[in-house]
Length: 370
Image 1 (spheres, helix red, strand yellow):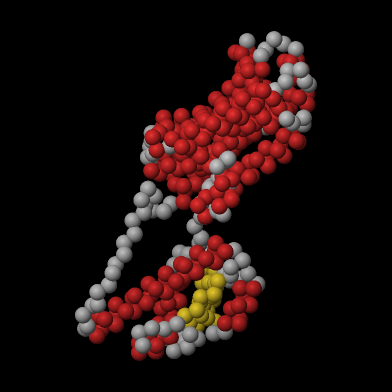
Image 2: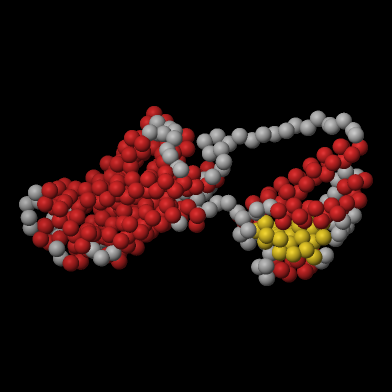
């Protein structure tokens, strides 16, 4: 009996005009487009230099900013007010003001002042842009210092040289962190969203009443509904893994079996949530709004874009009830750190708890008498 029900679900899914196209288009977008759209690097910052010194040193500093890949030099002016007007008109993001006697102070005093003014409407762009600009100024100051020591013939003073080594993601490539997490979002849509709409659609069409009068048990009906989407979800996930490896050279540092074990448990969790929503929804519109409600909240507090540790204490407590958080942690830990099951015990136990609760709720809330 269950074989025929599964066959019916596959036929019903692929007869749909939109779903087969969506199943191809969605993973392609997740791997090809989303990693670039969710770029956490800040580039193309429009900088304006207010040069009140017009010296060789101020000219060199301006050229150093121009050579940076982070900044676009929008112009050099002698008036801070003119530069500020351009920032207000959104023609600039940052102002570097080089004070008068900049070169003289560097030569005679060994120190000079500059002022960095950033447009902080976008606090991420303003904060990182200021950091990049300060790094360029410090680097320029180091060059001048080295030149003065060499020209004077003095012994070089001892300097502490700090070398940073980044573990797990040595080149600080944001795609290494974002792509595994985006795969989680894809799996959530395929294995959570689509089954929900499928069941509610049968309610609206009245075809579910034909199932209700058959001897098919609740458990058999629900499993037959979910198995096709489990298979499709695993296929989509494998497709994403392959694309990530071919396009970005992104290979998990850990074991693939650990990933697929976690995927299977997570599929049970998210499909159980979808069934709970479908059982308590009467129309597709209602189901869509409820699933979007959960999906948006889950994504925003999952650590996908912002670290959970930076959230307020109450928000961090709220994330404990978010299954996306645990699976994103698993994917990043396996991909970047090579973690094994012993390192993922807490996350796997949390997902298994969600799976038991949500699927039990789904089975108990389904009534054949409807």
